[in-house]
Length: 205
Image (cartoon, rainbow, N blue to C red):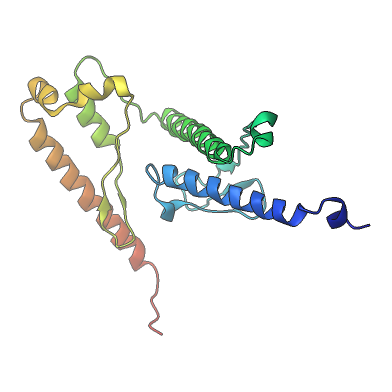
């Protein structure tokens, strides 16, 4: 007797789980894209670590970290045929997985900043700390080689500190100084990218 005769709905169950997995992946990707562009996501088919020899720390070895999450469906919901539980469980799992990703991402950034001393302390003057932070950031570039502005993420309770009027009260010329730093940083990033691309030979096919 084959397994399909023992479990007549096995093929359908496998399709159901595959569809549920796609639903979770799409939901997690949608939330992740709010923080990190999908163009910067990489997938590994094997291995648990990698080493980038082109980074500022070529000896650093990055390791994959595993995350586990559980979901429970009550037997009464299954017995009563409440199909809405599928989407409810999917939504819950998506948000739990995204929260886990966010914690890991911010912890990784924090650890990296602490390791190289790229930390700013707000000593009561948020405007001055903001300018110091901006000076420490190295802008990146997009696929066209144009500078991409950094994204600032703060705790909900601290967002009011970055209000433009509040910052201007501490430093009246802050807007002009921010624009000057941003312009200089953007030009430096685009110049670095231009010089990097010039190191590669181009063949027109």
